[in-house]
Image 1 (cartoon, helix red, strand yellow):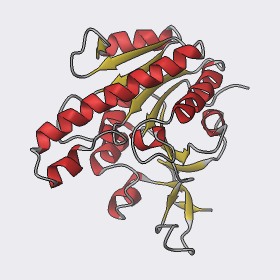
Image 2 (cartoon, rainbow, N blue to C red; image 1 turned 180 degrees about the vertical axis):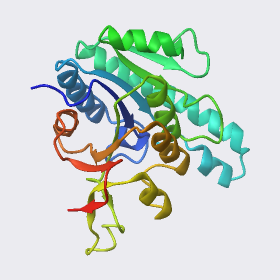
Image 3 (spheres, helix red, strand yellow; image 1 turned 90 degrees about the vertical axis):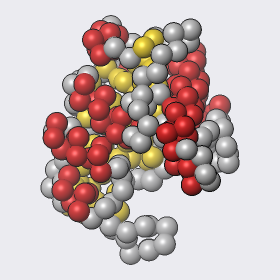
Image 4 (cartoon, rainbow, N blue to C red; image 1 turned 60 degrees about the vertical axis):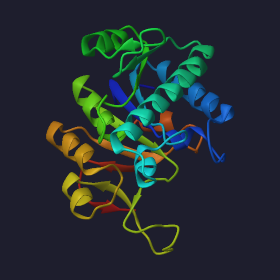
Length: 242
């Protein structure tokens, strides 16, 4: 089957890597993601990944406890590099050539982020994992995903979460909540739907990058999303509910 997309930015939260654990990384989850990515790479698409660090450290939470916010954010960036290196190892065990690029220099363990080098890796069939966020405090990894997607000219952002799309209310507390099949950027911003932070949504809107939100815990969903199947909610179209 032919992919709907040529170049994809996959956004993984740190929480997605810990599965049912309360902290850290679940090896089974990581290896499952690696297997799915290997299947996707076999279709010939180009794939970059931005990974969060919330399973290890959250700068915002640390700041609420009295830590300097910038310091907390830098520690969170280092946590994302730990996740990136773990994911790289799992991908290479699946035979997928992978490079980690970081926005903070860590030359002994990863390449520095260089846009043209990242694009060249993608063109050669390598997965590129972007670690350390944007390299700046006060910006989320969602914003990093939007920024990197624009920089590498990605066709789409896949936001892999633990829910099957975007709802008009919290489905955990409201059984009447309706799931959107598609949304426009302005609706996400004005209704404060919190699928990504406002800066990330605004960047995607400005650069016309659609966002597909889907459930990572359903096996095969990454491949289905790559093929253009309806597996969640797409931001960048009309407002429609399922």
